[in-house]
Image 1 (spheres, each protein chain N blue to C red):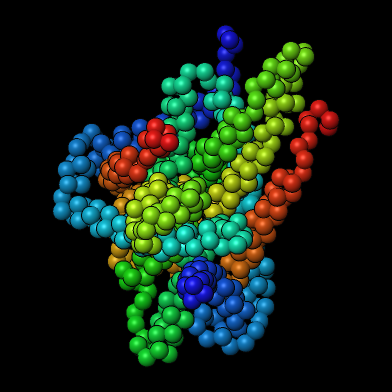
Image 2: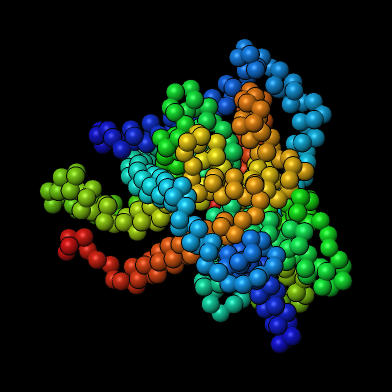
Length: 267
Length: 268
């Protein structure tokens, strides 16, 4: 086989231009000050309390969003595997993910507004009207709403792969439902949970549209900060620096949640 | 036992209701004669009329569709070429690093892609607008096409290609008469996904679009920032129905394809 692999030429060109070059440029810009000179000032800046607090709170929100997605998504995925028309139900879960994100977020502006449906319900059951829009709650709620199909899907797939005789065996050996879940089902579907967490956590760190529309400017995520620096204050250097840290965070999360290679060894 | 069954069903139903409630809510109020999402006064088609009479909005819809179709078509071609290229790589290490590079744009958050492309286009001197949006959409759709086509190539028996070569087929014949027909389902899936990626994208477009050019997502965002208008509701309902038709159409098309017995490429 001494023929050249011509197919790789356009593809490699794409990789060089749109994968490698942009990353290099982000790192390059993170080293530039506002005056265009090389400097480490952006990195010094990042380690001041303003940016560190923002990073921490961004992680905290992403953690909350992932946690609630998991708490709601796992039982949903589990119950889905028990239904009769699994594939149809699954399609219904996936369908909303095809709908433009903006539309779903926009709907919540109406639902959560001062006289909106949510407040009408609250009033009817006697709790009374509350400020829902522009709060932490609405931000987490809408984010969970947007991300939950991405949590359900990998868990559903993991549950489908689970050998049911293992569950039966556990029951036969006298384990309670809870023990079976904790010792058999959950550990065996952990890979699904991990990839779900990865699919939710990384985008949750970088959200900026939902923070602007739903949370007002109360919640600032890494994504909001990057958008702010690039498109509003035009401080590309600082924006690129935050982007570098977001990329690092992403790499760490992917390393933590990736189990595919290990799985190959054990099975 | 029946009680437990009921509770679990109730939970599922609740999840589905919450999942669909916002979209239904949005659509219902698009027929509201009052311009708010809280008091339904009376039924009207006015907002839909307004959408169809808004020339600027229709141009934006057209822009969005042109970008989606063009970027999906070009990225499908690039992606198929890439997948065939990766498949032909013999050394495992090269293959793994190519696949890693391929997955970078899939896992990267949109903000990172948008920001880095913005720098990239500015440095190259490409004017922000149609070209930059199209190039970005092609760029982030290519890896997903590769991912969808590659498994098809891997499941294809290499003896098929060998047999074709032995029977005297040229390399072009092998490509157009053996490989491409075999991986067609993967190509369709890739094209369709690229299409929806492009239609759905907001963040990347938001970064690389200049002043003169807008797609629907970006337009809805700027409208929504100004507040609620039932015109957005009407527009949203139309987009929702369009998406529904697209997804269901693809789903049933795929189902029919799967049920159809395998058609040999030579026959056609």
